[in-house]
Length: 103
Image (cartoon, rainbow, N blue to C red):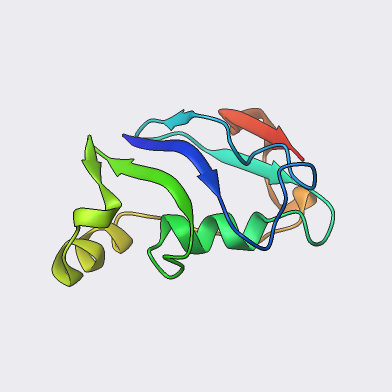
């Protein structure tokens, strides 16, 4: 389970993107579609989830454990569990999407 708790990034205002400052829970097997205009924070969000951007407020929890307490080995193990695809909608079967976020 992945939990996002009031995530904020200094260079993206809450007004710019609806996903910031929300608490979200994603479960194993969820397919998530994030749709937004350029500059709304899609890539920044993925970078935070992958541990590639640590300059964020709030917290990201993996199975209840804070990302701020993860070791380098923990991050490597987690990254092997993720699938991150940047595909246009016509490549995706949107009927299989568990949740959609339009920012």
